[in-house]
Length: 486
Image (cartoon, rainbow, N blue to C red; front, side, top):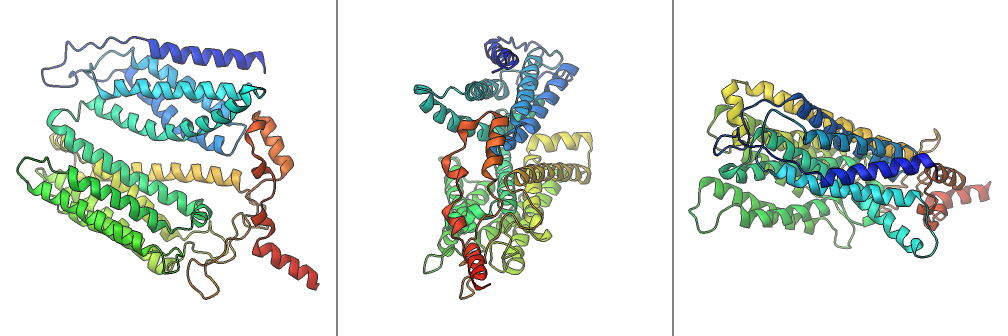
């Protein structure tokens, strides 16, 4: 191990620990009574803090996570860059002037995020040291698992922290506004998360879905039913009088768990094979219809909520069309190549992204600010749609990066070839997955990549040897038969 790496590792770890131990005195002498922030503007230092942390946690770390999954040599340099940016941004966040803040959730949660990041750095340094003898053999195995789990959790936790930062910067979601803030940001994030999951399954997740032996609607319906049960009993403050809003939110929760249970039941045929159904899409459509009629106090709030409802209805409708008419109850548009997609299939994920941002951007305090500034709902909605386009682009880029490393296209064979999506009787979903040609690299290429990444011990024996399924796949057997006849 080079001296430069040891020095860099120690410096990064020391800087992280120093950041965790640094005390930050919060001045609040200029904050009016009952407010969360002072009327001062955000100064340049705080803007740089926001930019650097967004770059580190919003762009660099997610990209580094994907490179780590595919064991790219660029994983360590990129993550190191992200750590440097985050440390610099952390200190800048404690050195700003201008606007003052009361004690807030963003500052509290920053400690937890920093601990996660420090643990990730420690695991990464330990794995790079290649200590494999004695007790280190077992420790290394657990370190690999922990490093992977934290790395995949980091983008989700970073998203939460960025939302906390935006809320804190504006002084929102305090006292009576807390409840509706939680509803908007949790539900909006859920729609965006659902859109990301649909994008993953569309572009790279069909083989995994086949291995589960379940249809996608099984998982969707199960989650919808669980979420509906929570909403049914949490949307009303028990012991108080029922309002129209309570009735509406509680009834939506009831619809969710009722339709979710039906969707779970319809996700299998009588003989246990996975089957597509429309229940999750119908739930999305009904939720959008209900939200489009949600009563509001401001005209701009009414317009934004109505657009949110229409966008969500469009997401449900496009999903129904996709399953029924584009895919015709199959899992993929092409029965031979699972990664092939129809342009229509990208509509539902994007509309879910847009729905999530519209709902998160429709809180009472945000609407009041826009109304006071006389910002039109058209301009505001177009900005939110623009952000949705950018997030969709970033997710597609990350998935393309993953696919190019995991399934390199050699020009003659498709990386994910499926024998058929229909069974011998033409029943959708009864096909047998063929060999994942190109899914695994050659043995010598894997060893070369591992040496470059200096993580030789992370590749399992199962990954290095050809799978039995690949050798005995229908495609391989057919090839043998053809050779024999010739």
